[in-house]
Image 1 (cartoon, each protein chain N blue to C red):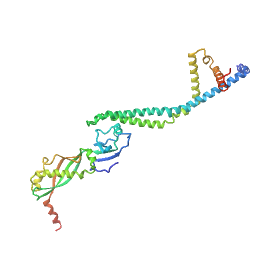
Image 2: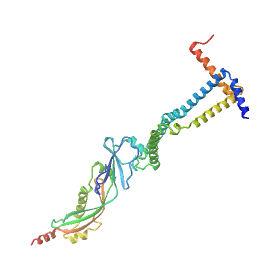
Image 3: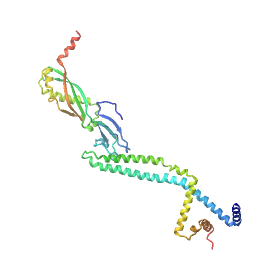
Image 4: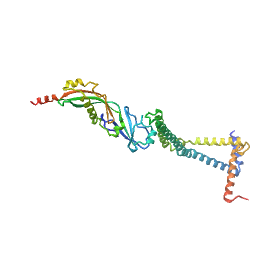
Length: 180
Length: 179
């Protein structure tokens, strides 16, 4: 079953396998094969199953999971410790599937449904250790050493995290002046 | 010269007895029956034997070998799985190639089930040549085994002897052995 083209879906396609397949499923560069066998067990054999193993182990379904790195970008709001200032960050990062079996088992079809959660928690923890009272201080404080090296969760790894401040909560009243 | 040949033919023709003509008729009958038998064997029996018997048997053997190779490659690959190491590419190649060979064999067997079509259109001349070759080979074998035998010295007369033997055995079978 060919799934709709979606760069946020790590499962490229799903294939129902016959009892005695006549050939191995095609290899996709940058993707791995995850097989569903009896008892709802998932296998991710290195290099995929040989044809004889397909006959012996009898997987019923094949998931082709993309494990190549992808770019991503999300917005995240952080609040100062005092709670007086809120800043909006644009966070760029790379994500990659590191546990294809967990991705299949959790029916993960949209990484952007889980990445903001993991990334936001990591950013909040990182920013919580900083002392800043305005955007300028936050911009200076957001050095690569402050941001987490990588975040793991739900079979994904998020790495090469970069963040930039795009606005301050204090600037919001500027929108009000347009009505006057 | 033509007069001599005509005289020889007339002399030969007039010297034939009724028993001679019966022998010639029998010889011609045997010749025709053997020719048609050989033609049936070449044009009908051989394609059936090849297409319906030998080809499926050979195909079955090939499929059995391919299946065994596929399973053997799988068994050899199994020890690599617990240590999460990719098995050698040769094992994948053996499985893929065996499956391709098996599929090709199945297609070939289905396509060749009618036997070689060339045999069904064997020309009469080839049948006659084959017939003559078999007769000549039989004659040579008879001469090797027993140079004094009738099949070696006078093979055409041997056909008549066979007729006499068959007639005797046939009448014995139906009427009972004469005392």
